[in-house]
Picture 1 (tube, rainbow, N blue to C red):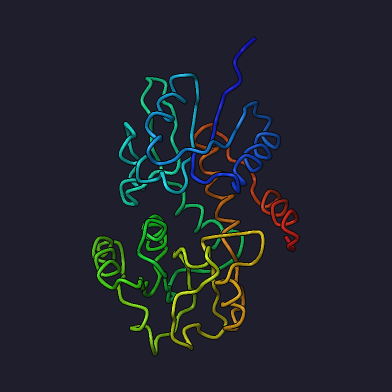
Picture 2 (picture 1 turned 120 degrees about the horizontal axis):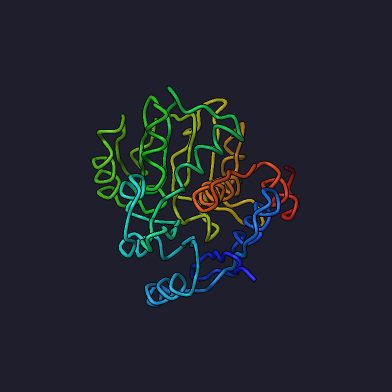
Length: 279
């Protein structure tokens, strides 16, 4: 009897992960036969666990916090966008036994923003909160859509300025501190900090959101995040969390592994229904 292809997501903690459900829905939708499991893997165990997974027949992995940078260093081959992000969230076994690393986070974000939510990026003023790995992973895809201006704001100003400098050849991007945003106005504010996971919001000046502007939190939870609530209180036309980004980045990984791209809107609706939210 042929062996069923195995996939998994590694992370620590991992119990909250929606990835097994997402990929199970993708497989049913596309007629693919596979298994997908969540495995709790602390950072110190990553290399051993990844090597064992592929040696024992695993076909592909997703990596989440805190493993994306470790996966970047461990992988045999890297996509251009993984090199830009300096992080890998998707690993695929090649026929020659090499492990290929990709980063589908940025693609997932822009597909959710532009395709599912209908938000334009071209010619818009974009604010990205946070200069860590989450922000780095989405910068190149955002700049590729030609915003008028993209500002990276971070608690540690130097980190934002350094990150902006690294991506400066891709578009109009600058870095600053949160206090430096006073008097600015943005059409789209993206939260890539970890603050909302702790129920907090960065210390931001008032009036940042332009009339008709939108807010988007790269994080997600069972309830609206603190940043989503902040956006609604600021009068955002749309204030959303990152569940759509999660599904879209998973679809890109699924396509890399299986050669077929699943439809995502029904899966996003299913996850939102599970959270008691409207589709």
